[in-house]
Image 1: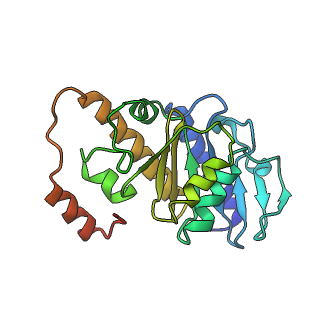
Image 2: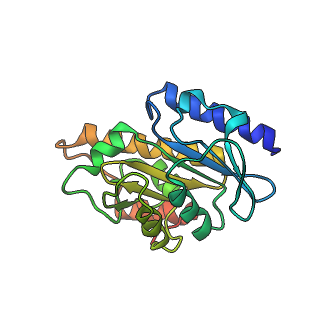
Length: 214
């Protein structure tokens, strides 16, 4: 995809998520690999509903900013995914309500944040790692992602929001929406003793769709 089209797609998908309430105000950030190996990143303090394709932060392949507005303060988080996952073509971070709410629950599995309610989160995300709370913009978030050694495509920042890396911008957005939908289901089903997917069914999905699962 040419860079001009990529800029337009980033802003279109960001606005779609904003319009549907998946992140509000000036929260969230998004980035994508350019054809030459550089990065396009949403600027700091901007709203997903009003991103300007011409003002996205532009980095060259060495990580030097060469154009656009100053980038999000969460750059260490994005860089950690790109540096540890060779398949990462885009990274999205939201402050989506239900996933944040689920991260507040005291009995959530830190190694496998989402309960196995539907096949789709398993297929698109694999296991989601719940990370502890960090101050927004703290470089330690990036170090925590690096500590996973590229083994997870998605993490949940406790009391903050999800972060997902995908092969391209569309895949990353689809996956993070699936994360939020599954967290919403978990909240809705809390206290109802829902019938979850069995361990055998999960293993079948992991095998059939070649899911990263450790």
